[in-house]
Length: 251
Image (cartoon, rainbow, N blue to C red; front, side):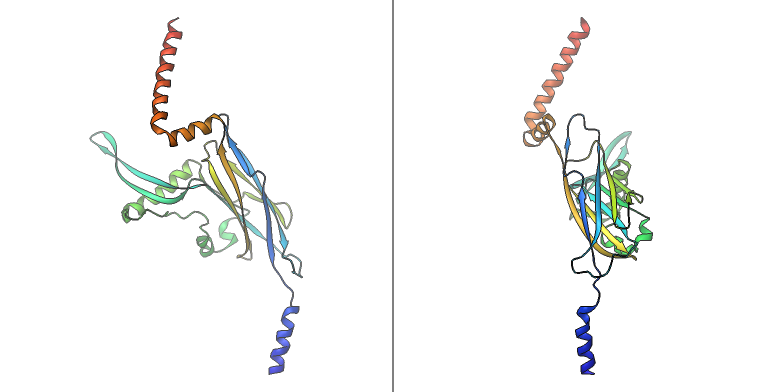
């Protein structure tokens, strides 16, 4: 018996190694927003390669799921109520670490790629119940959370595209990410998950940034750092524009 165990232990290193890894790249690591920015499409492409030391060829079929998450922020959802003919905000819930942008792209239906438990563990797709700030009403959070997600979907900030990943060969794929014209500036994370036979076997992350440049950047910084001065300048500019318009049309 002892000799048999020793023989098995000696044979273990000789067993064929099977492991895959992802090599990914985003077409641009920075997107600039100017006054003429009308949205942009980025391409995320990658290959599936054997890990160093693997002795067996790659065997598929593989499935790829890509999630793109925009800057996290605190987001307030409010309820509007008709009070004597006037619509007023009567209650609100603040959600923390809420993504300002979220897309899920895959090469097949998510239900065909893996099981719901694995999808839920990786928040694929985005959970319908975001995290509320401590102290908020649990009932309001339960009601407002799914509605906030729905509003983000209606605005095009949250999207699920189950045909967004295309395989050009057994091991080479690409996906295109459409950023809208009102894409929030900040750091974005593209996370790629590799599946085979329903199991997650590899994953990899790539980052890129969206930032304003030129006069738009100056305005954004001024509104945050000097809000009083920014407001006064806007009022003066509006008054001047109105006066100038009146002079021009009088003539």
